[in-house]
Image (cartoon, rainbow, N blue to C red; front, side):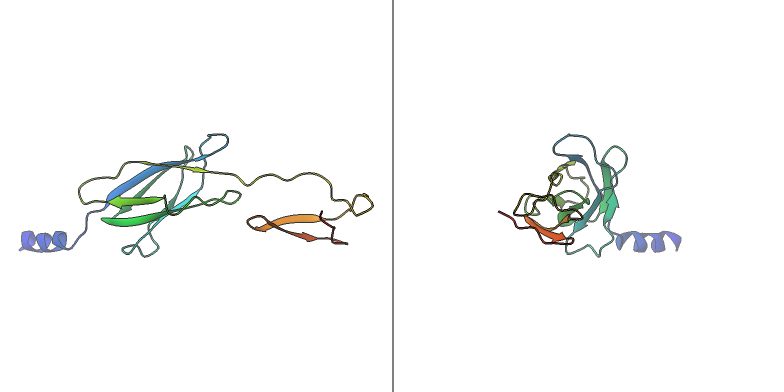
Length: 143
């Protein structure tokens, strides 16, 4: 009786394979810690995610299927989702993934008014790719 119950339970259980990989900074080539890595596909219900460890490595157990690999880290551009795909087959772990993230460019300098006087209290923030917003006492004139 126990053997029949165990066989029934195992027959309905999908055996997951392990998707492994590493995430590094594209400029410094150093591993990135705490990066959110997830798999999105028809079988996933949002639970196929993890964070990289201190060596930039990650491991995610996933059932067979095709997945887009989602990699998110504040201060870094999103990788191209068309190239970050993985195919998981029953009985075989896929090849390890190597992901590099490009940090946002740093902006430094002074904001000047049209008469070339420094404007105090101006803050720049990056909201969307290649677009900046400004806040402060006066809006600077950009040329």
